[in-house]
Each structure stands twice: as C-alpha cells, then as structure tokens.
Length: 207
Image (cartoon, rainbow, N blue to C red):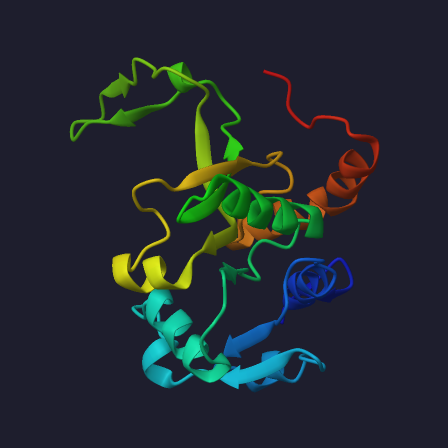
C-alpha cells in the first residue's frame, strides 16, 4: 500500500493486469484488507489464509489455493507480484504468447545484468575476492515481473523453473524488483524514465 509515484504500489500491477488482452480472469490473493479493498469488478478478491501469507509461505501453495476458487480449465497461470510496478501490460502479454507459441511449460521474465559477468564475483571467508571467469551467452537475472505456467505442470513440479522453461528478456528498467527500501526508491526514480523508454523504444542500457 506504500504510495509509489502517487498511488499505492499494488495499483500499478492491478492496472497492468486489467489492460491485458490475453488474461481472462484476474484474482487478487492477499491477507491484507487494504489490498483487497483496491480490487474492483470484474477482478476477484480472495482472502488468503494466514498459513499461506507468512514469510515462509509457499507461492505454489497460494496459487493452488487460488485455483481452487477459480475452478479448472485454465490454460495458464500468470503470477504478477506487486513488487514489479514497472512491468508493462505488453510484457505480460508477450510472456503469455511466448509460452503458448513455444509450447513451453513455463516462461519467466529476465533482464540483462547491468555489468558483464567478468565484473561479478564472490567474497571468500577471509575477505579475498574471487571473480567469476564468465559464462557463454549474455548474462541475465530473474526479475520476478511475470511468471507464466501451465497449471498441471506447475502443481506437479511445484516450480515455474522446470525442464523446458523459457525466458522472456525485458529491459532492466522495467524489470526493477522491490525487495528493500533502496529498491523502492530506485523504482520510484525510474518510473517516468521507464515509461519514456517504452514510448520511444530507446534502450536503457548499452553493453
């Protein structure tokens, strides 16, 4: 509910989902009354049990709970977390199309890493630096913006990241994920620029 660029954080995701041309039904699962109060028809609000809402709760269990309330027969589950406010409706629809056209069991969105792999490394126990030698291909990171999965495979494998999962690459400014106050401040600063980049087609990062 924290305001981001003038409205509650969750509203950015609700609006992006509502504008999708490929999503047939939007269900908002939460244990927070303020969040559920933001839900307007035809969206459906679903109160999430406490056992599925704590820090140790399973996202897959929350999805299973949601599916129980929407019935069977869905082609895909699309998980949209409110901590990705910069993702566009176009990103959502592109991920669904990729899953459908490729026949993949799932699609996850990723963003290019902001630094080449040769800049990444680890710190040893005694503080010494170990740089990664680099890997083949472009370095990417899961951004958490869009998860698409086929319900039967998702419930059987209990993960979106399974054999055959495909990746949809998003610009890094639209893949900003909020886990900390620092991330929130960055997302709010990026908001007008991310929309401008999307409108002009300009890349945010040049490698």
